[in-house]
Image 1: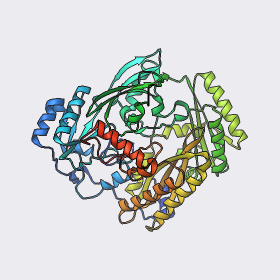
Image 2: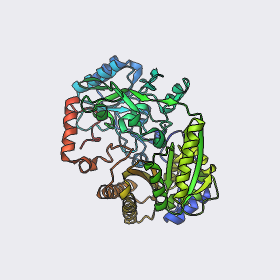
Image 3: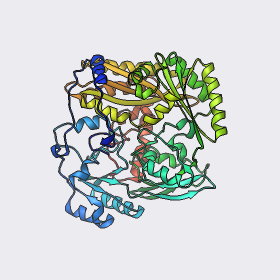
Image 4: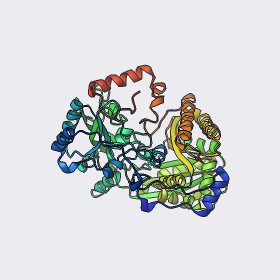
Length: 526
């Protein structure tokens, strides 16, 4: 990906003149060109890796697989949150890892961790670099230096068990690469988060990723059947059977551990045949309350859509202003919902009919296939819009949470108000949009998109808004993160999320597996 923006720069599009004018009216924004600096204008913090350490690491992975070049360090200088990108627009020297190390085997990973433990070098495991919560920031902390452990060479379809319906995938494999390899055998994983084009299998596991098709295929942690993990204290092979009563499931310890406890090098996952058909239908509901009740009915009665999501009135209206995103002129008011159904022709038709009946009974109006197909076509492109908004001086970021159905409306109201009040205090009007992104029998995830006008110090401006939102989430029965993970950004709320004793448990596990504390310092564990 680009070092200073999302994804492939050739796919980015500038805002149209009409959209730019609309933003100016809504956000009291005078659009101005504020592009990010070029590579030639960036100054990196000098590498602090000693010559001896460089030579020792090169002896492990090979001289071609370690680099202290600025071009390589810059592309691993952090993730892709708005805070990351705002900082990369600043003129001050940029933080970056002191070296990029690319092991090719588990044995090399073990040797690198052993060396770094002995020499006091921090290690940041790195997959696709798509974190939006500071999860791959190169924090040196109390260590002599910090390296990025780039896992791209740990790829491949390592095994496929067609009888059991599971595959072993290298942790450094990107999601498109994994799907392509599985498709050669007639299978798919079916995990499609917005980061799909760039994120890796190991990253999905380390962050408890949740994809857009989670209603049908489950979250990524639901798909995981086993893990290979290399820790500074030794390797672990976890997951012996589909289910076990042999004590706590240690796989769960590493799912969501964000590289702080060990380096995931291979993942055994559940796979299924490539769907024969996909059926589409979009819906309109008069308001968010009615639409949310309809989604709850579907989730609690197990009707089985592969994708089901609901935009609130504000998000639907913004999408309407950008007609490409909706793909229809049928939506004029209310809330847009999207449903997709995959499987054999018979399975998809049956689930579609059950869901359709429930949504009609709950007050929905069918909009046909077109809006759902349009959503699928553009579903990975929203981050590019964020970059274009930053370029004209707007502030744009997302955040997410989850709660039970009983508290969903309250949580949405309070988080929206917290964001609006915080941005208003900086002199910026705001537009807060929300959609239900994932549903469960007992609750749902809320995904917020926030627009504002950048003021004098945009980093501080957004940090205050994020703090207000995080406090509102914890005060109103939400989790601090449903699928973005913790990283540095959500770490301040972890004690409130799991309690003092919960933090003590994590610290004890960390001490056992990583006694020197070299793995991804400053993330997850308070």
